[in-house]
Length: 241
Image (cartoon, rainbow, N blue to C red):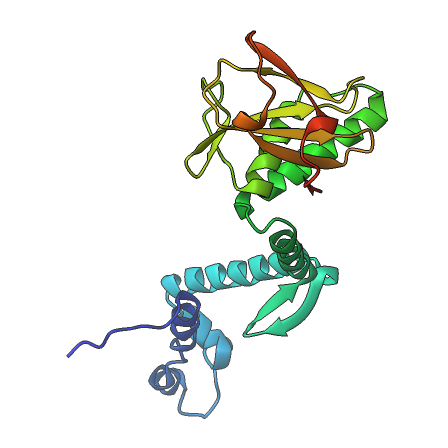
């Protein structure tokens, strides 16, 4: 009856190497009657002469695997290790990430958590670029839309979708952004769009972001297609970061 071998590959290799023991009967046959051994016919030397070639190859692969383990250990950032738990290391990076996500959940309770890193990274990039070059990235519209998504829970539409920028429940939401370099705190709204709520996002010179939302029916009546909406005229209840 054959038995199943469930050992790990390294264990099988090591077992194969250990199984090649010296041939004791061969030693007895090679021993002369005077009791003296011929050089090279006994002990470990005799075992090597009869060691199968497959075991030598197995030993070589085993030694290579050990070397790879040492190389992997050299690449470990031991300064990032916090503590050992449940047979694995917990790193400071993982702890900081968990704390960051906890902070995000408290700060943006309506957000889709996967969207928050994009907003944080984009606003940080825009600020760094401006401080370094004195110029502005063409990214404030995207920052405003991401802010609406993580702060109000707006589900954004496809890029360049007609009518509105996203949905909040049954409402279509138009999102407009006041950039840090804008001289007047106002936005131009196209009234031909199919939206029932307007969200105005303001990014100030310190790259702080806040927003104010209003129902469309609360906007001033306008005969023309475009309406200028001032930040000061919007309800003061805000969401910010």
